Image 1 (cartoon, rainbow, N blue to C red):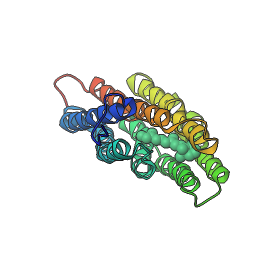
Image 2: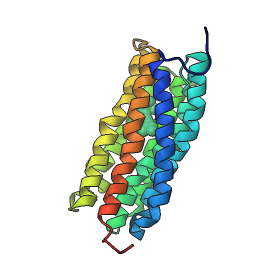
Image 3: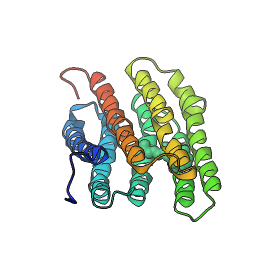
Length: 233
Ligand SMILES: *C/C=C(C)/C=C/C=C(C)/C=C/C1=C(C)CCCC1(C)C
């Protein structure tokens, strides 16, 4: 019997449900906990909550597209990315500014780089631009933001830090390098060469979002909490 709810054999569909509910729970958690951390870290925790909240709403729709059509919810994914990825990337600026005075140039470069990455990717994937050109523009945006957090001004500021804030920056840096590589690989194997099927592709994206959205936010929250002296706010 064909069901449009969820079949027990639909592992990818099950991961759509799992992450939807995990995103809801972490959103509630971040907004409840934000006032329990030191004031300088509250913006970072708020951003984490916005990321998981926006993703939760999109996942409700993506799940619906998946279980009822069995096809990739590409438009919803890109709308979600367009909002959540810049918010995730500017977290690097807020991690630094929670512990020291840094220039706003870092903020604008991180924002600009993510927009180039996503717009290039979308134009290529939605057929408005040559597939390879879209990929190259997207990759250029990603390399630009990776350069900023590794060797650019943000990376140099982080190198002068010590303690939990530095560990947090380092951890997040590897998430955007390794955790994020899943998406361009998906573009390459799922879309450009067509060698990965949609079941695997969506499964991998869903699991990656667990790390890249939920774990990323939790690490920032944990850092904020560990730098908040007991009994103080
Ligand atoms: C929560 C969602 C996240 C963290 C999504 C991240 C998406 C990317 C890092 C996408 C990157 C792309 C490239 C680097 C080149 C080709 C096109 C994209 C947009 C798939």
